[in-house]
Image (cartoon, helix red, strand yellow):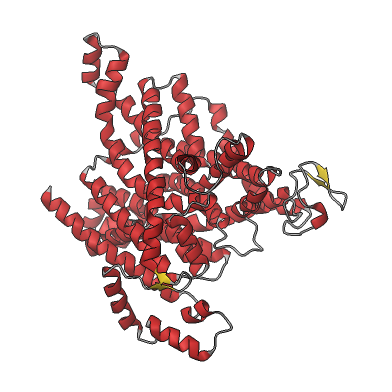
Length: 583
């Protein structure tokens, strides 16, 4: 145990070095002179040179890098020229708010998730189990920022029970914590449900029943207690993901934490603050992963197996829905007949079904600038599908190639790939995407690259696992004996076995990419203003929630419905692959 902990600590130090180096490269690769960006276009040459000298930008890149590492080791990230104070001071001022939000969300998620999972797993296949399964699928499919906006619409603006933003009282924490906790509740509930259902079939549980113990005693005293290990492991890992989710949630509720700080810093190219926030969060994730490694359990206990679909007719619904969305993305803009970014102040804030000044019907209403919401949903579908397919294709290509090579040939390639995994996974995916997308000029290609930065890791891990298994099969050994080159064995005998899991994984990753792209657009990062996105449309309607609910609500429904059906489709493909492998 001590040796394992020491090894993980060394890996953690290496990961922090890699994370710091990655942030350094991203910041230095950003277009434009940081001094010019900070001072603005009106600065003269003398001012720019003085600032470059004070920032150390007049030195060689190698000297800057060594100096940067020295400063980071002392937690000195430089001066925030936007705030006029040390960046670390600004980060530490905002840290308590993020800690409060994250810990509260974690507590809510653990309590509610364990309760729902325990009740569902106690009677698998029952009515409650089906209800909980449906709810968890929905909670994992709804964008967190849209959940937050809907909670504001209902509980703040509609019922007036809770404040919609700000801090100061426990009531201000309720809506942000619930918003952040909902996806986490779904993960814990599904995991607990699967673990409890498996434990209830164990012999010692049957023995407890035979001794006359009631079902409640069996469930609480035996099944739940022995099902907590995988839950504790996942909680440790997911808390790091919660910190990443807080980046978006804090911007929905104007919560003064690290999330709102880093988004403002990215928008204003305040690189000192960006470095401070990202590396602090990376350090938290590394520590939590170390704790999770110590409490590690077999992977098959950690992953919740999706329930099989019993009704063949209903099993085809996700195929039809996803196909319809793809059709809308391809030909919908040709049928709409009007520009989604065209503004008309005479037609602003029209209710759904109203007639516009040109005689057409705004079936989904218009937004604050008179833009048709239906047109934005249709064009937003094209944007999401384009980015989703492109990102998954790039991630799949890179991940499969690297994973197959590492898993089959092993050695140094495998060791290097493992360390790259550790470095990239030190950052919550959405946080790294925000930093990359905010550092460069806006474009669709930039968003694809930003989302692919971590998207390929899952494909590489799955492919590596398959390659490690297949390389030990007898026919692969026979091919080696016959002198077949390793590259040919890899292509002909190993890669074909990755097709099933990769197709299922690609479907699930597509849903995650669409959600992440919507999150970036909601924050106003990545895409050009002329490119329509669901996240952008939802953000545009936030200020009109009290009277014009449709601007944010309808695009959110369209986005969530797509993610739900893509998720179900991915579960079906995964289950089909597992059944085929078992057979």
